[in-house]
Image (cartoon, rainbow, N blue to C red; front, top):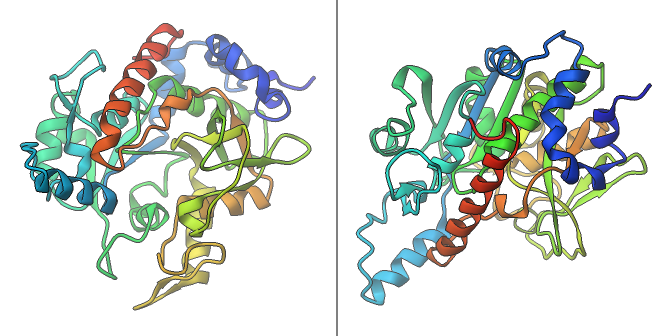
Length: 348
């Protein structure tokens, strides 16, 4: 008999959102590890998982918007040299100070799911003081990693993950999110437990990709006949416009099997990196010289090793690229947190 989780991450994507209140219970009942308590399952997985939150992006649009605000005489009381993840927004977390830095939402979404690695470009003391300590994350519970920028700017989140591989390569699972997203703790939990349940069932899967339904997704996912992701569209990465109608798109969060992630990171680095020139990856914008996690995802999809978990809200993908995005982010984050709190086991 086919597991319901296999169907829900394969052919029955349209049913998943309406069954979100049972997803964690299904993972408990269908995993073959004999674990039937959610706290016990999360404790088991936390010892085998590394959670990466990426805060090292260049953010050129963000910097431009700060300059524009200054030119207009607006006093934001925010040092433009600081990373955008430290910009204060309304707190809908139910813990910590108000306002809270943008990146607190991404950090808090991984509460209790594994050891933490925060990828940065400086500002560690401020991140500790303004995000981690108020959320109860002690220095003993996290590692900072500085993403090097050999060409003068960070060269993508795939490169960041490859650079810090020594901090996660011995794990079983790696969760990745981004400091500018309205991340959901429910989606993070569901992704990890469903991925492990599928692995315990013997499913060939290297990546479980949480997704939401969008009218015109900027990062559309193309599915094969079995409902598995076959390709991904990404306008920024390709340097061209992406045309799409209503469909599924990832919301930023990714749940990988660590060995699958490591193998593809090392392969892409070996095949497409040149010292002094950066990355030259077919399909990417040549001017960017970047390596993105989307490149890992595409290679895993070629091997039919990606499954979709269509359980996310569209609001989870509400990145702050400029100051103009902040009000929408605050509304999205509040909606995401209300939603997570209403689902069984959704908000620790």
